[in-house]
Image 1: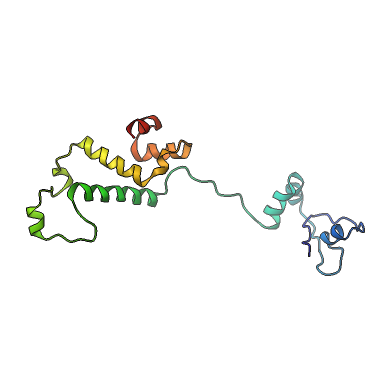
Image 2: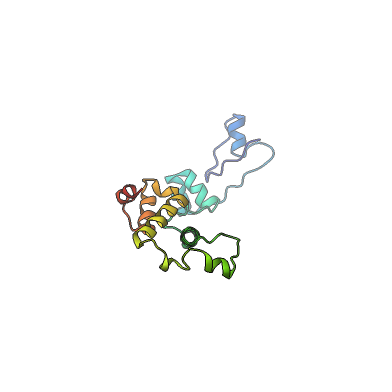
Length: 163
């Protein structure tokens, strides 16, 4: 079974069964060729496939991929970094409640501001968590460079020096 060619011009029968069936000259599925507008013909003449896709199937141009991170993805990523930072610095375990006595008797700080680490040490821990959560930051393509700059403020060379 052959599909019928959707061209605007219907060629004459040639006697070749595959060719004739493709152009609707055999028994079975027929082909009605509507009159095409000048703009539709122009589109088809420049590129038959593009003409068929845009005017026959009404397919539109493929959406371009944005280079920046979706706000939700960026938010989730930064939330995970912050969450893991709290787990490491404050000793908070996920899905485990601590009693007041445990909190008061532990040697762990009550918040990150009271942690014994300096700001640069905290940043280093956060960046190492980010590197684990987003290994795609190590790629060297333009999109990854843009995302790296947006998330860390680092250039590609600064990031590799830090790693």
